[in-house]
Amino acid sequence: MSVVGLRPFFRRVYRYRLAYLMILPTALLMLTVHFMPSIEGFIMSMLKLNQFTLRYFLRAPFIGLENYRSILTDPGNPVVAGITGAARNTLFYTIVVNIGTLGLGLVLALLLNRRFPGRRLARTLVLLPWVVPTYAVGLLWGAMWLRESGVINMILVDWLHLLRERPFWLIGPNAFWAVVIPTIWRFLPFNTIMILAGLQVIPDELYEAASIDGASAFQRFRYITVPLLMPVLAIMLLWGVIFTAFGYNIVIMMFGNGGGFPGEYADLLMPAITRQSFGLWQFGLGAAASILMMLFMMIFVAIWLRVFRNVLTQEGSL
Amino acid sequence: MAATTSGLETVQNRLSAITLYQLRRWALERLADLLLITLIILMLFPIFWMVVTSFKTNAEITSNVLWPSELQLRNYIDLWDTVNFGLYYRNSLIICSTTTVIATLFATLAGYALARFRFPGSNIFSVAVVGTQLIPGIMMMLPLYLTFREVTRITGIQIIGTQGGLILLYTGFYIPLSLWIVRGFFAAIPPDLEEAALIDGATRFGAFWRIALPLARPGIVATAIYVFLTAWDELFFAWVMDVQTIPVGIRLYVGQYANRFDLMMAAAVVVTLPVLIVFFLLQKHMISGLTAGAVKG
Image (tube, rainbow over all chains, first blue to last red; front, side, top):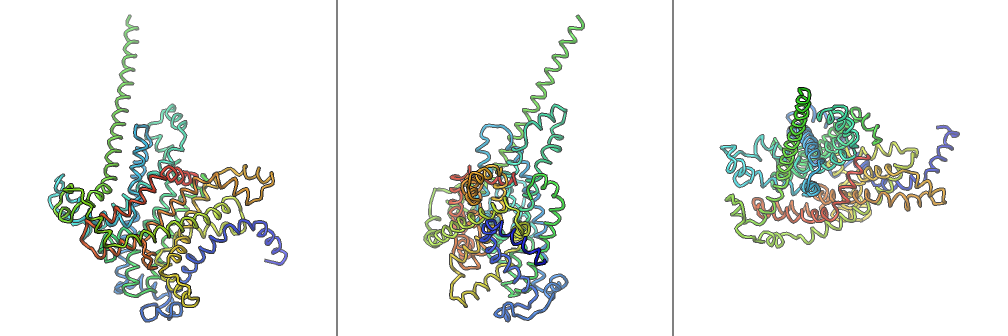
């Protein structure tokens, strides 16, 4: 920028000094707890940072992209083996949980959006699982899934006789569902209330006009409800994916008494990277895995923005 | 004569068509009621089970008894005796409420700036705010931990293991999302009122403080509650930073009493209770506030 160009720039900055003052504390905090550690993490991902070099921290030996290469192409590495499985689980977990919370949330919101006595009570009751802290969710469902004394097998086997044998829920492939179902249970209420709020701002006149024009109930849902609900659904999807992809508490509290290995079917990336970094003292590898995870999230957000851009700008949301 | 009969028939047909339609509609509505009730029961059952189980003895749990034989408070008393819940509760309350106040204040200021001013760099700032949410916690954790250790070594100020350190982290972590919610509320308020105040001689900050802030209050309250609940739920960083909050205490406890599900359910009830109380006290603000923010974006 030339000297001539600088002066108007500074004048504009000065004109907005109040705005800068208002964002200053936030900017400083974000710099301290988000950006500084992220840059350090990025550097760490290119260092040989293990139990021997940890005390040198950022002055540990530089090995370039070796950690990334190891994660992506080296199946023999014990750290990597655990993380690939966890990455696969996290992908499926994120997809299934979000389809579940958004789909069931839409159904519940539509059911709650009708006129019936006790509507307010119903809405309050539906929100209740949301107040159970996630670490307590892990504890509670961990007890419910128990093979011998868990209530789920008690219902399925002893009361309803749906199954002859008591299945293991916390061991083997079922463990995946043992993590998915409580997560849906915990996050469904919040999505429901948000979608319900979205339903309530759709003007009744639209539905009335469509009915007069002979639109069926399904057509009204397809051409009025769904498009007008899109902004809310898009936002809930974005936050939902971020929360589930970084899921930690439920898994960690459900298995191994708060810290062990949840088994190959229930392990998620956050617990896996944490366990591998600290258990095997491979902090450089852990940082590289985290960076890769962040890249995946960025790709998701880029796709999300492309898909929903029109929806969101119409509403003026972004 | 024939014409009249056919006229009557049409009327009858139409009437039966209407009642049939109404009957079908009524049946569908009842079906919807049934589905709703089923879903609500399914959603409430785990909570109900948690409370019931917390009153059982361990023997009753392992022998699959539905109801506890008596309403004994043994588990709660044992819990209180074995765990330093007083300490955990005090730590959690201090940390969560301080975080809530500071984070909400800063988020409100920055959210207003983003909603009202298009200053040089405002776009970059917005992207940075959303971008922070994509950083995995594990990636920030070790650098933060080691940096804090360096700071302590150089300046002698203790950060790890202190309430202040965790408050610093939580405040930073929860500001971006809160800021985004609050920004939505300010954006939804028409700027006319503030402009009128400016013409009447108010300062720019005065217009924010006296006009916009009171109007956005429901949203700000909702955001504050959101921050509190999120902080109350945080286990990962509290564990690493070695601050004894409730989640950390529960995790330690669970590690010690691996198969005592009677005690664990009592613990789960005890940690859910305060949140439940907050929820019932503030539910009106929370629901209307959060949803309004989401819908207006």
